[in-house]
Length: 234
Image 1 (spheres, rainbow, N blue to C red):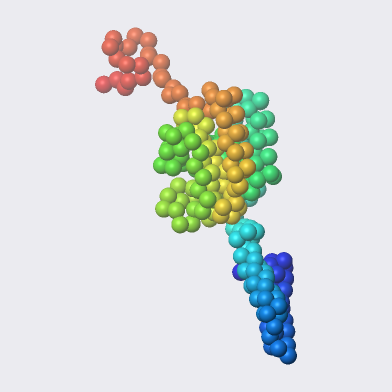
Image 2 (cartoon, rainbow, N blue to C red):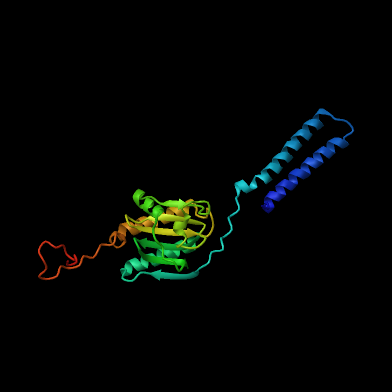
């Protein structure tokens, strides 16, 4: 990995200073104690400059390159959502896609996709063990690098080759999923923003994001007594 210009300059100055210090001492007619002390100090300073240049990558790490994700930019919203919830989902997803390194945003309620925005994949998403774990703990799960993670297949339908994903639970049966462009792309501020918006959605639209209530069939008139509603006739 190439060093940035500032790091290369520090290494070059350190090497040049060390060479000049050695050359100055070798060309001196005699080695006086002041000259020896000055040479030692100059050598130490030169070595520190080289060390600072070599460690520059750890102090200022280079941002990871974006993964070549494939997908069509778009927006999908479920039908029948309240107008204020539709407006909130549109605003929040726009902010995540523009202010964070998010490539795709998904809000899922059980098997129903309420929102899908960003790079769209043709495959429907099915919540798996990681989403269920986030629901049980009611805490977000941040997977900074999906490549070596054994449970990455759960998020393949979200977007093929997704490098990173954040799973934010929205109550017992709904999730906010944010996929990133590169490994370790989400900062602490990004994670706090995702968690804050998830809590806002849970508190204000808990009924819309709650579990889907099963529809019970009405009992036919004149049915046999003791038969549960909707039970097939024998």
